[in-house]
Amino acid sequence: TLLLIENDRTWEAETVLRSVAEGSLKFAYLVTSPQNFLSRYREYTEALTDIAVLRSHERARELIELSGEPNAPQLQPYRELLVAQDRLDLLRRQYPRDVRGKLEQAWSFSGLVAALSQSQLKGADVFGALLYGYWSANQIAHMTWEGVSMPIERRMRDESRRQAVENAHAARILSDCYSYNILRLHTGLEFVGADLTALRTLLADHKLKLRQSTDLWRAWHELEYPQQPWESANSPRNS
Image (tube, rainbow, N blue to C red; front, side, top):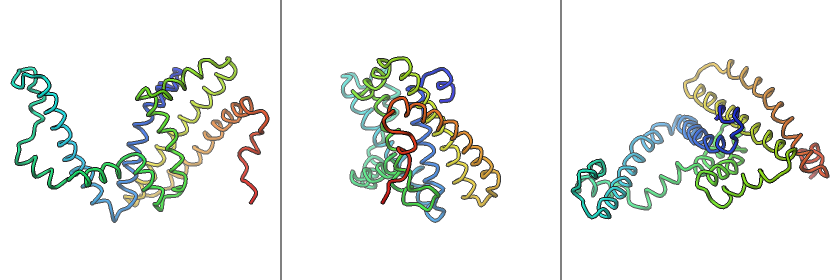
């Protein structure tokens, strides 16, 4: 991600950041609740693995059937993904469709965000803000209309507007990378009962780096929305 940012490849960095986000949230979900660690660990390492075996079996079976030559030597790697009927029956009984759906939803990005938003983590109430960035990365990765049109629209801007939004975009991605790193460290250190002094030093450093990112966001905002000053846009609403 950092190398892509350094080489002005913000959209590609956004896509790579998606994996950073998924890994960070899964790690945090595993360790943020010690009383649920064992059950979540088994879900991740056993239940989801079994479900993946079922999915691989079905995809391999379909490919072999479509080939019209199920015994062709070239299909050996796919035949090795097929599961013996007795184990297949056992897995299907153990993980009927509704159970598979619930488990996969719980471990999806939106499911993880929902669970962590309800946790005791500091700042848990802002986890929902991660969904938009993840949605954007998905659009790019899957080449949806939005994923195609966003980079095109940016390239059509005049140079000053394009550079300002590029800087703001890159700053947000870098800030997210740092935040995900802090999330992993914080939840991991708390899980093992380690001293958090070093983490507090990192958090203070993060605030300094965030200030630099904020300057870039401010510059983009003031160029793009001159009629709405940055201070008023970021001040709390009067009740």
